[in-house]
Length: 412
Image 1 (tube, helix red, strand yellow):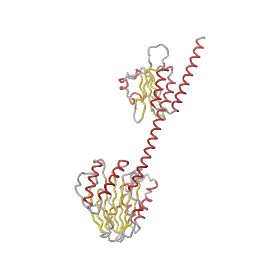
Image 2 (cartoon, rainbow, N blue to C red):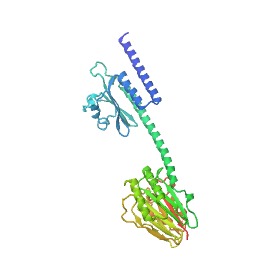
Image 3 (cartoon, rainbow, N blue to C red):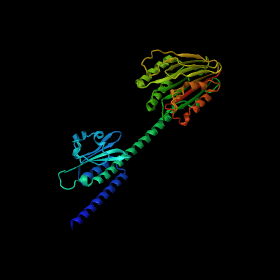
Image 4 (tube, rainbow, N blue to C red):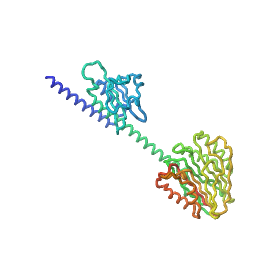
């Protein structure tokens, strides 16, 4: 057989090898093999079948990471800075004459691009650089590029799939946490609606779980306690601290404990739980049906709005102290009292309601709240008007925090 015939047979064998290799790799990917196993097979093909002696793969996953190293010393690897040495390469590059001596030990850089963004860099070099004949890195370069693209994209898809599973698991955990947290918030059907008071509420966490909380507790036949609170920050950590706060509130708030003593005890427990990393603003109050006296402490919270419907007078309930968990010892603490004789309304809320900002950068503020409360409509109607006005349930883009409302109407 002449040389041309032998060359033709060799080309056929090489083409058959490449096709069979791509088919084998495709089957391995479809079989859902692990990243480790795919890299192992890729390394075997390049080293044993294609005679590639030096091989590195750097892949991006939040940061650049070396995912495969073969035939290279640790010293060489340490000297390669992906962002400094490799990011400039947008196409296959020959680097045997690179000004960087570290890169000169390799022959080529093969960037793997996805959506015009580099997600990996493959560095390859020969086993025997003195051997006669065509270098395998030149002879098989485009095949290596094709194979590298297939492997790296497959590994990226595995990562994305795992991320999606983790996201789905996290979503389910958040949904469960949201259900658990909602159980801590009193159901509206359990709140008083009698000839003495009417209680109306609204709760809207910005995410699945939030750091807002309100509660209403019957202390005895003639006395009730209630509060509204807001943890600094958002998300899981805020929700966990609020859950702990709810347990302490329920354990400590009784008829016998004076509000100043209650606040001091709550502050100690918040400090122990949050360790100064978070704090809770709180409005806590007791109301007696017999004496019609409202006693309260505002611990750094948005001042609730009290409106006397008969006298047309409005007050902001500010007396109190700093937020819970801000300081080990509360420097000054003042409780406020209010005797409610005429028909009146009390509107308590968290700061998410007044930190709504529209497209013009204008916040909702308390002025709008005051306008919506200064009338003879019942508290439930006032709250519904505010919710509709601010499109809170319609997914308004102005909302960026939890929103909670606790409204009480006192009858004369």
